[in-house]
Length: 260
Image (tube, rainbow, N blue to C red; front, side, top):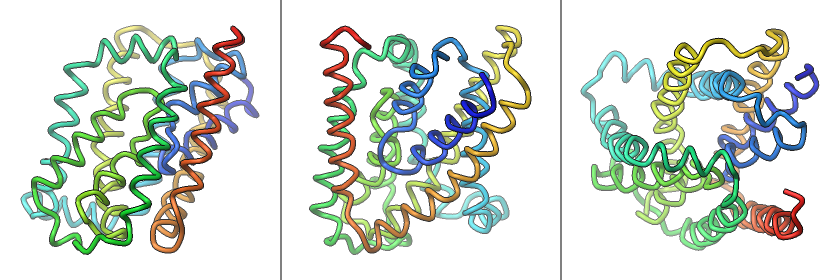
């Protein structure tokens, strides 16, 4: 893996982690395109570390407040949303990892993400709940959707934002809670991948390329968070829905023709 490939994969991971189009699905396609299907766990870990740094940078004040008041209401809401995600992830981890290796379902998952985004856009103007009005049942509901995003091309940010909008949560509050909820999810993924790396031994990838990929992932992740907040406030999710429908159709077409 050269530094140009690392930079491109970092940009893909950074943008698609927080835009509602599925980072895992795009990263799978990107690695496949560059012939890096076996680049594997270390690369994924470093790219996820970049997006974790991005969201920590955006929400550092809120995170500092949570650390200072670990039993505040927002802290408990994040815990309530994380629990179903952890349960789903641990229960179906082996099954979904096997699916992720083959990529056989990602075309259909891109299409499903598009349906969710289109439906969410139709109700996003109806939300009135502020962050203070989010209930624990809302957090659990959103956490279940985040758990479903363990499927390779189901967008985590797309599903959690859609879930929040379906619960009549205000657009700004939906984005805020979705990205806040992503922190333990991404951090957990980094820790689990790190554990596997330690158990499996080091992978032979250039350190310079890994650092470049991580840096680009962090920078473009920061841009994506800010951009997504603006889109939810002023724009539409339908463009993203059309994009993932087209991408899903292309993947399915390539699979049907035996080229992917």
